Every structure is written in C-alpha cells, then in structure tokens.
Amino acid sequence: MRIILLGPPGAGKGTQAKRLVERYGLTVVATGDIFRDQIAKETPLGLAAKEFVDRGEYVPDEITTKMVLQRLDEPDLGEAGFILDGYPRTVPQAQSLERALAAARRPLDAVLNFKISDEVAVKRLTARLVCPNCKRSYNTEFKPPRVDGVCDVCGHELRNRSDDDEATIRRRLEVYHAETKPLVLYFWERGLLRDIDAEAAEEVVAHRTIEAIADLTQDYA
Image (cartoon, rainbow, N blue to C red; front, side):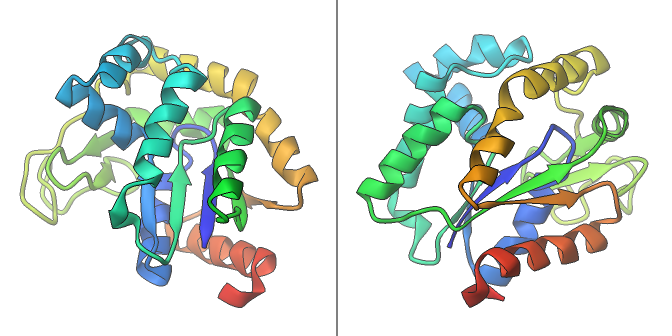
C-alpha cells in the first residue's frame, strides 16, 4: 500500500503515520527527516536544501524530488509499501512522483488530507518538543512528556525545533496555502483523496484515518 499524507505544519501527520506503520507494516518516508539527514551529512543535495529550510521556505521541486526518489529506491522499504509525509508539496512534484511510481508499477492507493486552522497549527507547533535521539514528538500543551523536558521512550533531553518560532511557522503556513493546496484538487479529481478533520484528539483522528483508508482501498479495511 502506498499512501500520501497532506496537511499544513502541525496537522499531526507524523503522529498518524506512526500509527499506520504499526497497523499496516509500512515504512514512513518523511521529507523533513530526509532533509535533516542529508543536511547533517552535508551531502550536495543537503547543502542545496539547507538555505531554503533555514528561511522556512519549501525546497525547490528538483532538489526535493531527487531526494525522495533516491529514498524510494532504497531496499529497506520492503514489500508492504510506504507512507509519504511532506511530499509531494506541489502539482509538478505529484506528477513526477506518479510517473516514477507508474514506471515501477507501484501506483498510489490513497491521499489523506489532514485539515486544521492556522491558529491551531501555530499553537501546536510553538509548544512542540522533539527528541533528537528517537525522533518522538511531544507537545507541552496537548501531549507533554511524563518528566518535563525528557523523552518518555529513551530518556534523552527534548528540544524545540529551530524552525518552530511563530514567525517562521506563519511563513510556512503562507507558503503551504499558496503552493500546496492545489494538490487537494489534483488528487481529488483523480479519486484518490479524502479530507480528515485533524483538530480532534489523536485517537479520534486515528479512527477517521483508518476509515478513510478503508473507503479508498477496501482490501485494507
């Protein structure tokens, strides 16, 4: 099964992706993780992406697509399929992805569009904490760790992401609305998309997510 998760920053795509991994055995391919890995390793693509990430802007299609397609060709993805989180962000990216998947005879099964308001996104992201070791996310208001500032899973010190200040978040939301929302129409017209109200509690959103997948792909109900 091959799934795309759409939605603005703070919509909870990463959290729901982890649940889908547990349920279906899929592999998450998150562009944010790819960017951070390649930037940390100072690869040519990583260095090219860094200047855009630091400004809170989307990385150009050419760089992003190369990174993602490289990742999709790696052997650890396995047979169960994958979840794309953060890609595609534009219609040209979607078209490039579909061409690559068609050539590999691995068409998309579902596109899930997680919807939240800008104010909810800002509130969530400014309170977000991330474990730099195991990558688990917390939120000081909605989902705090059991011990203040410490990861529940591995005990590592939690940190704020450098791009989670309010000005950068609002810029990211502006870019999202301008560049990414056309994808909703693109995938809706192709019969692949379902909207999900993501402002509810995590468990409620998880149930809505499974229902949407079952609606699109009856084999996985």
